[in-house]
Image (cartoon, rainbow, N blue to C red; front, side):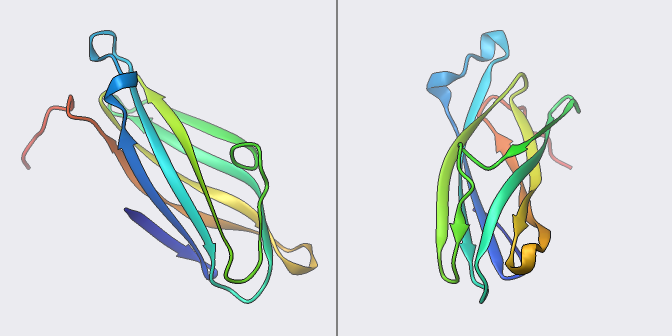
Length: 130
C-alpha cells in the first residue's frame, strides 16, 4: 500500500494487476487501484478535481484531469473517509501513477493534496537487477 498525507488528509492507494482483463500478446495490460481518502484534520473539505500523471514503461506520459472521482465530489467532515476503485490500461507491462486532488476547505480556500506515486507492476515485466 502507498500512502501520502497532506494537511492532515491521508491518501492510501492499493493497485492490483488484472490478468483476466489483460492480453500481453497484444500489449494490453490493465490494473485496478483502490484509493482511500481520510480527513484527519479539524475542518470539512471537499474534493473538487483530480490530476493524474501516468507514465508507462516506455516513458510515454499521459495526463488526466477532471472533476471529482468516479462521478463524485465527496465532502469529508473531520474523521470521514471516502473509498473508490478505478482502473488504468497501459500498453506496457508496467508503469507509474502519481497525482493530486484539488480540495476546497472553509472560506473557499483551494489547495492540492498529494496522491502518492505508485507502481503498476505485472508478472509480464522483465526484472532487472541494479
